[in-house]
Image (cartoon, rainbow, N blue to C red; front, side, top):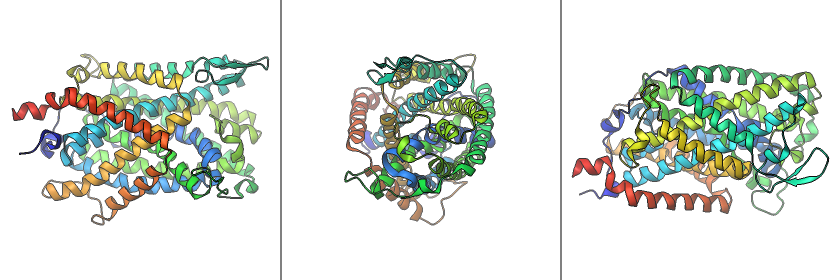
Length: 480
């Protein structure tokens, strides 16, 4: 008899799970969602941080490494999404392949991934907003633009301790209000914002490329300082780990199966389409950025694109680009906050969390309770934690989810070879194995403190599971 920890949800049950959400999303909307989440703080902010602190100009190589590893994982996501078109992303796939305990761990991990990711994005958005308003002559009090006790320079030149990041908190609540209006309306706005954001990226590349200083690429891989992760190949790998923060988009797409009209077909299209577009954009954009701005000056710069525009000496373009980027962050927050609520919704629907999290608003059919909970939690994180710590915490959660998904492909091929798959990963077990190895290699390159935070979060999750989930699981009730 299967122990409660390893009981699995039947593939057919996982695929047919109904939550009451409206199925309004098509393939192009899913591609736009993936691009909207993927092209955000990872491109506009962490590119500079990763270059300045870890990889130098070789941050482009870091993005390529991350893209290859994500490509392996993305193919595995595509197969499982076509086989189990259920919301919940890696959580649902793990529930059908490896059992309830692993599903709980990865579901709890996804909550960390999306929550901390949204906090990091909001923190970066705050920096761009301040830069944009500053160009228009409006200046936000610096004490309201950084985490508590961070030294900031006041308008009179004096140094003061920051209070908290107020604009970031406002961004979280603004997007939460948009999501609570309904998926159909908010995804239309998201698609428009994504188009604006891509136009801005093309404009930045075209305008900055003539100002590239080849000297900024030498040395391409700066010599290691003697500390693991600070330049050299270890720095490139650590930056690749941070870059996984940038590739949350296709993971978010897989949480929207219950919002999709034909998830078995459209989810793989959304995942692979957004991954392809974003991988090219990241490689080209990071190369241009490090060519225009010396990487040494970007270590603590929350808005390196604004810096690149200023260095290129194009004030006529600066305000337009900053406005486009600031607006573009809305689509990133939209996807992350949407993914949080969808994972909690599915876990609650399965009985692992209280039923209040699967209740939908009667009029908008949105999980309003989850949205409000995560708005509070994410606001706290973005107000009080610096973006570098938030980015690393998001990356390790993403990597763990990717590994679980890659393992899930061969497990389900063994346990359910007869199950229909509209998309199948080519090459047998090669790609899933490469996905596990590549994601694992990047994961071990992250710093010890990031690992400790992950372990603490998972221990808290296990306490919640054994106190509530194991006894209230829908599978437990069905078997009793």
